[in-house]
Length: 195
Image 1: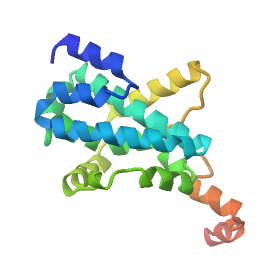
Image 2 (image 1 turned 45 degrees about the vertical axis):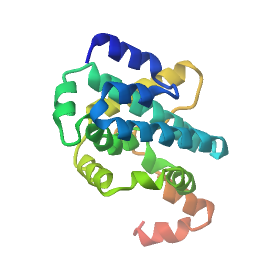
Image 3 (image 1 turned 180 degrees about the vertical axis):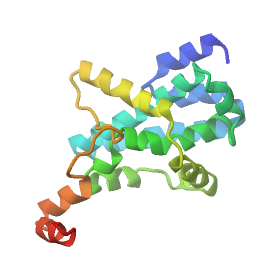
Image 4 (image 1 turned 90 degrees about the vertical axis):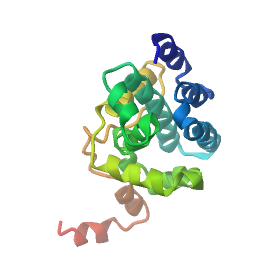
């Protein structure tokens, strides 16, 4: 991949045509990248109905995934990613679990997380992608953590809310516990946990 191509991709971070550009750069996986154009559009369309925390997560995930690809292609990871099972697209799918955690997915209110999940195209839940996600659960992709950190820094500078880094934060109240407290189930949870 030529430096001019990665510069073009870098300029497209956050734009609707980001994955279209990737499709032109990675023709072996063009169909997957074109589907990501539609997936990104679906997620963006759903964000207006999200609460602030969920919208912050969704917007940040989109940018984290963009930056993860840019950073991969600009680094020594490019070769291994392109030659891995599924090439660059397989690498991209496998880094999702790290990106989820790096953006605090486990701390989201369960209703917000459900909203995000319902905006995921059913076609994305295919055997190949599920296998790659499962493989990604067993790994930690530093490039995705770096990308999430970059997105948080950019959003802070812009005065926007930011996600919680699940690799650094041990928030005492993950999403499900917060919901239960709001629903007044906190005492039973507290007692059931032996506290």
